[in-house]
Structure formats: C-alpha cells, structure tokens
Length: 205
Image 1 (cartoon, rainbow, N blue to C red):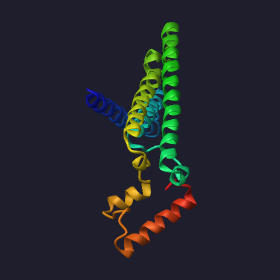
Image 2: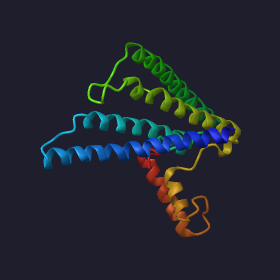
Image 3: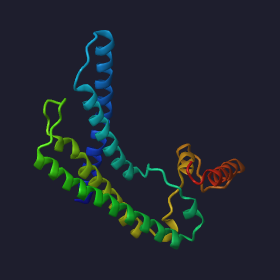
Image 4: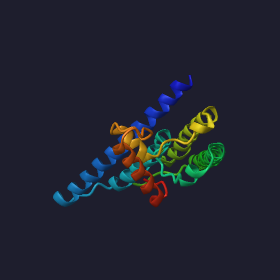
C-alpha cells in the first residue's frame, strides 16, 4: 500500500512539475510573439504564466525530497561518529517534517479563508483563487510524506551506513568508478581529489 502511495505521489509531482514549466514557457512565448508580431497582448498570459511556474516550482521541490536533490552541507556529518551522525540526521529530518506539516496545515487554513471570502482572479476568467492556492497544502503535504519516508529509512538503516555517499562520489559511481574501491592508483587519486574538493566546498559539490 505504501509503495502505491509513494509511486502515486511521485507521478503527481513529476507530472505537475513538468507540465507547469512546459505550459508556462509556451504561454509566455505565445504572449511575446503576439505582442511583438501582431501588436496584441494576451491579458491573461502573465498571470497564467506565474501560476504555472508556481505550481511547477512547488511540486518540483516536493519531488526533490524523493531524490535528495536539495542542497545540503554534509561536512559536519562526515566528521562525526556514525551514531551521532544518525541522530543528527533524524533531528534535522524531524525539524523539516514539522515545518512542512505546519506550512501544509496553515496553507489549508488560508485556503478555507480564500474560499470563504470568494477571492477570484481578475484576468483568468474570474477563476476562484483557492484553486491556485491549493498548491501550498498539497505540495507541502507531499514533501512531508517524502521526509517521513526518509525518517523511516534512517531509523531502519544501521548507523555505520546511514551517511549517504556525497554527490561527487555518486558521479564517480555513475562513471563506473567505485569511489570505495582503492585497488588501483587512478581510482585512489580520484578519491583523494574528491575529498580535497569537498573540504574546500563544504561538501556542496
């Protein structure tokens, strides 16, 4: 059941993020062509573009929690004993999920207020604005679900394996180079270079 929910949330996040950015660019491009080629502007285009990009950004950000694609400075975790690193990860993820759930809850509360006062868009054919603001509680709830998955995963993972490979190490692995394998001088040299770069960038590479 949880696997079905996870896949469904992932599909919704990806689909809305991809559609939002594609449709937003298409609407903006169409409006530019209409303005400069035909001396006519689409009144609704600007607001529609903003809303499409907004939905794309929020659901894209929610999807990034699944892929661990958000920027994270891991230099402190790397130098800590694995048991402490696990506790630190659990603490940071717990704070994150509390924040996400709080925004989702108050976003829902605000949604009810907007619906109650019947706020509508002037340019988008009198569309109810609660439809636009729906992005906040839904996307943040999806993000919170992903963080909840991560917390469960961290709890189940042995402390000596809980700190994931860095992005640079994952890139090397994608190139077919085992970052943990020091069996030859070339690989060892690359690993040393990765460690040196990460020291200088604070683990942000």
